[in-house]
Length: 266
Image 1 (cartoon, rainbow, N blue to C red):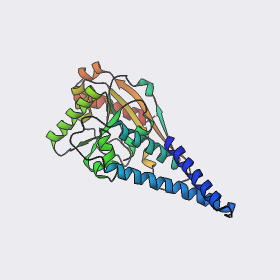
Image 2: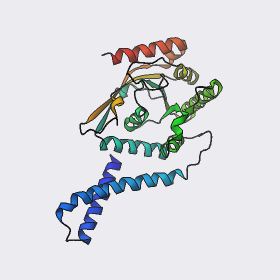
Image 3: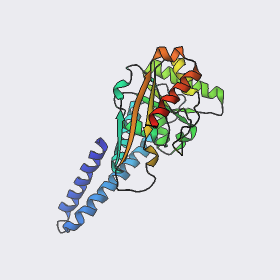
Image 4: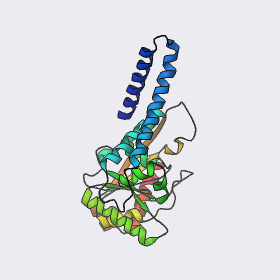
């Protein structure tokens, strides 16, 4: 919302400046000038982000996530959703515990973490993501410094170190950690086989698990449409710390999967 308002203000200011400087300009040109100013504002913003990344050198590991980077991700995603007529709805947020937790959900789109960040205000949230996402120009450096963690699933030792670092962030920095236990997005909407990483992390950090569902994100940005789209995120259930520690990892995995599967079939 904040970024959208800023773009509108800049566009109006640009249009007014052109009109005052060239009063002979036909009123019919004001709309194209306004749209040009809006587009120029977006380009300048992207240029600003590009310059910012020059001052974000990659240092491993990130011991303290930068709140400024997380904020920029949030407002950018919020603006992007509004521009494309996408409404993201978060239900059941009141179920989330006050303490840091591991957030798990089904995975439909590469944009799933971003839709979550766009609406998860008031909590520090980072995601464990595949390494290739950190190579995306501009965005990769921002998510890295926002505290996102790269995981190498082909290397068990490195993957375990990533989970241990995530646990440290939860205990010392009070962050929530999001993981998609399917490991990759489902192209059919059907749940894929769950991997144990999220449940290993929850037990190592002795934290609750927030079980969520994601609906509608698989349609995002597939094709241009003037019709509004809706993405629905919902906290279905929270497994408290005692439950997490009492169950085996396999039992946690199966129970979480059953909750998500049952919710998606409604």
